[in-house]
Length: 108
Image (cartoon, rainbow, N blue to C red; front, side, top):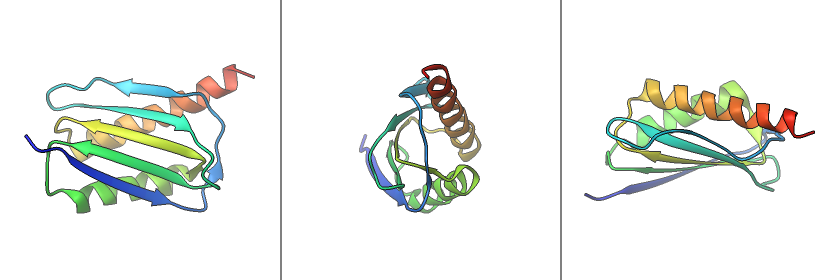
């Protein structure tokens, strides 16, 4: 099985404060998402590792939608995918950013 590695960067996000968060379980038809702080000048970097090759355009659309909804900056997102559908990817991304931000609020 060949793993495809996709990278996306979205600039001009709002600096986001949080604590490293991981959601999901890497298993058949699912994925895990890790969100961590990173000094990126307001950018959001996303790296996707997936066994489902050839879906770069769909991944880009899902990541673009995520960034449009959340406008987060100074974070790095890592996605390890085992064949999740775009709806599940969006759900896990939303869960990850909500967890990241909530943990940041409780760490004050």
